[in-house]
Structure formats: C-alpha cells, structure tokens
Length: 148
Image 1 (cartoon, rainbow, N blue to C red):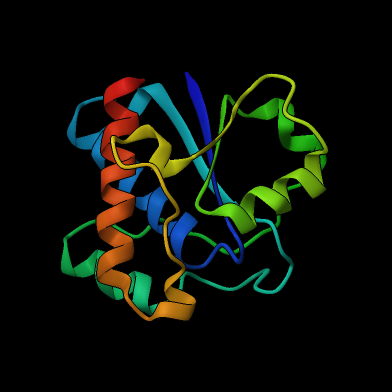
Image 2: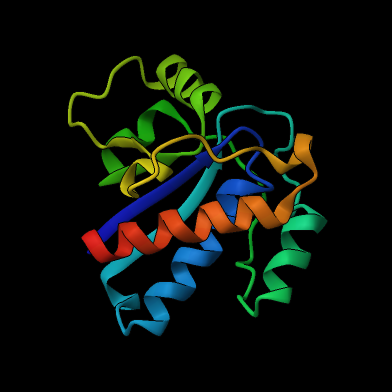
C-alpha cells in the first residue's frame, strides 16, 4: 500500500483537489486499494476549513467526488508515515523544508514533475482560475498514477 500526502499552502484548493482527483482516478482504474491518500497545508491560515468553494464547484463540474476534508497542517512527525509527499509550487517546497528540514528518503516531489511538463501548479486562491489548476492537477495525478 502506497501512502501519498498532497501538499499546498492552505490545504483548501490545490492539495484537496489533488487528493480528490487521485482518489477518483485510482478508483476508476480499479486500484483504490493500493493507496492511502491525504492532503495537508504548510501554513496554519486555513486550519479547520473545508475545501474552497471554487475547488468544490470545479470538481462537481467534472463529476469527481470531493473528499470529506478539513484543512490541517502537516507535522514534522509525519515524514515517516508517507511514501510520497507531493507539493504544488516553490512556496510549498520552502514550507516543507521549514517543517521537515531534510528529505533523507527522497520522497518529496513536485506534482508536475511527474509529467513531461514540469513546473508549478498555480494557486487559484490568487489567480481565480480553477480550470487551469484542475488541468494541471489532473495531468500530474494521471502521470503519477501511471508511474506508480
């Protein structure tokens, strides 16, 4: 069983979207039993909040169930609990370095680095573009599932 933790800044937009998308892709592929999937934040700003309404609306539009989730911050003690810790952008990478200090097992990766088009997943909290975020998250999750 592979344990995957998706990370973004607040855990209400991108990481929750990735958790929902990957969960559904694995289910559709008949591989749901192979994974434990969760998401968390690097910051404390949104702790306890549900997924952002833009994330919920986009996932409903594309018929992907939204996971039941409340934002939480990742903790240093969790490092050993996960096989993959997958972040969205350079800001998240800095936050993870602050929390974990190091990645001795090489388990921390950027989502779009799983694709042929590496880069950051833009934060729709700032851009307002949940369509673009969904396209990137879907591409990253699809590529990741194919490679695991």
